[in-house]
Image (cartoon, rainbow, N blue to C red; front, side, top):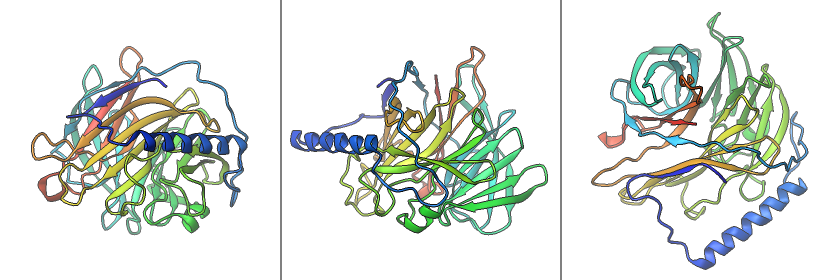
Length: 351
């Protein structure tokens, strides 16, 4: 696998015993074989389980992880999804709040792609309540915004020209079989295919091991195809309480070469809060191919000194650099700057 792995503060410690490592690796091999045999699950609803593509990547992304920045010029938030609108404007959703809707942030980047300034241009309220808005994607061809709601496992289609919600659809198997707060967490528009992609955060009830379902949808929100994706084995035991431990897929980003970036996130909250951490990793995939190409990773901590804890949940591509390189913009959920300790962090990755 290729890419960069950045150590925030003291980096990653590996305290698992040799035996546990062997067991984890064995489990991954077994799950990989299951994907290849395509017996992981039966497709439900309108999705079609697609054949496996086992071709290798013939290139790699050489990514540079730039510093994270605590932004104080925007309202304290639970920023969970971000998408680029153009002209340095971004639509951003928060997973808590009284009303459905989205913020528009103007994000200025430096010549090398680093965050320089973030300005709040206002909140656009939509009809209805906020049903845990976790993901957002933008189709620049039609000027439509798509918002993924985790609580209802629903995606809505908002026409920015008419300023009306024109369509909505429920991902039925997510709704029926997801664990609480583990449904839609990601959404991206693939301009090359003219399709949307979404993925459940963690395995559905009854699905095998670490497998989640990548859905391909038409722009009118009809399920078209379904693929398997294997999330990484968590560092902490999956038996930890849900309010202290979460792991799985946080967001997706379709690239113009037909591949998709997957943002995986593991969050662990210790009983006394100190030394809690978040691990983020980005992988590159081809839909239907079980291979994952590592792109970048980092871990942040909640400490008494030099704390940088940041729960990154949103990811999108911003404008290109002058030399043609890509910029990925990420936003973190600070739980409304919880108790004055957590911060609204943004950062970028360049490749």
